[in-house]
Image (cartoon, rainbow, N blue to C red; front, top):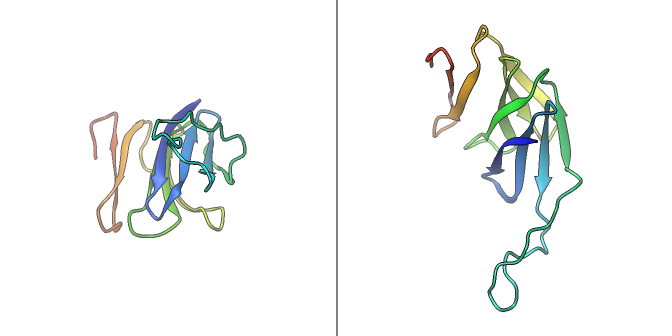
Length: 127
């Protein structure tokens, strides 16, 4: 099951999904797909079956993810394994891992506007 998703701020056709199978998948909406038909009516979506990239390093379900607001192809994720990871999706590799959360489930994850800081809030009401 998909637990969260976020669109890439540098590429309107790319988004990342967080899954309960411990993976992050990067998807691309086909360039020739249009959301409306020739009459201007909404069309049914297209089922995407093959991701561009699979990122796997979390040990439990991935619960949240957010693209970096100013650095292209950088993504942050958090998991039920009580870690936050940052990723370089272009290189398809993990950049860093933060694990100083104890047994506190991370409930939100957000970059500041410039992308200098990454903040989390946890079940213990800590930020």
